[in-house]
Image 1 (tube, rainbow, N blue to C red):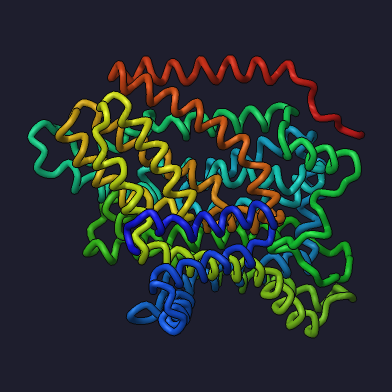
Image 2: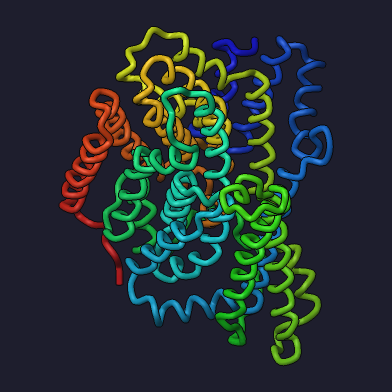
Length: 521
């Protein structure tokens, strides 16, 4: 049943269940079982074998699965950093410092968006690092965790997908290079094509404009308004009855010995260690050639993350241990408790990730993405609407499979082949539409790893994040679709981008007249 209409059933089952029940692990489990049964033509023994393989491959894929295991270890290390930053009083000290220097709720929101834009190296790293720095500030100014998760998610992948100096950019440039190779009409390099595609990514343009507007204003709509109203009127930043990944359950002793350095130094070393390791591994894998594009194309992201994570975690433990001499509430016993509390706080996120990876493996075996791509590739479709159709298809694929990388990895070569033959002038807009759709679908999908990590980084309930982000993501997608219709018909980037900006301006004018969410002082 591979590469057939039945291949889309497992992701549909998982996504519908998660939206109806809000129980992520149960829903992912149902999708996994359905995928295994369909893949094996409903043979119980063979299905059980596929189930086992789908989980085992997280840790062993024809050898030690460094990528997945190191991502899990990085999450656990981040939990340890969070625990010791809290134990040492660094979070409290940073929040006190922020209350003196960041004078308003708006400033706290804008700072979060700025940090999200600034950390453009990798989306996983962005999602978790921004959450660690911004959470004490947004908590102080009663910004709901759902809003924080939205800020993180909407500045992680969108920035990475248009930045040439990122793990995303390097991978995309490599794919684009193979598409452009041998094209007689092409006169530009892969990096030039990538840079031209950036302003054609109308979803990124729309999503970033909306997230900045939301940060600057006090306008909210949909489920987000409910979360923000509750946060500002009651001080409850999340629903305590729901599971919150990354949230400490351990009550640490309160004291006033904490310093801003106790939070900033581990985070700064985490960033410095990760970026340095990315450059070093990329340099080594590129044959020790110092070419910045080549370096980021060959960088080892998981190894880099684990390097930065170890450096940050060790630093946070050492800073706490130094307090034992003068902090009457600090002790060696709390070191072990802190490590365990940090690990335990991340176990929910780790389990969701493992289940999501298992489902992704089975969906890949069912060739769900290839089936969806073939539907468009084999259709007799006018070339003018191909960019918007590719945008929609990439969005559906990423939503159904939970992976933007898998979606554009399949669709970019197909889009390149179709457009090279049908309408070479629309090649770059079509490729940009694929990337835009992949990020859009990823933003909406409850089984996306980056969406899961954004919830974790913000300390938000996962389904609360998905539901509250949906209206903003869909709004940006509708505006992007209009842009792709215009560029498909006219072939003009200026006209399409101008149309997108005009629609955004009208939308912001309408939103600005909406009654802002009330703040209780």
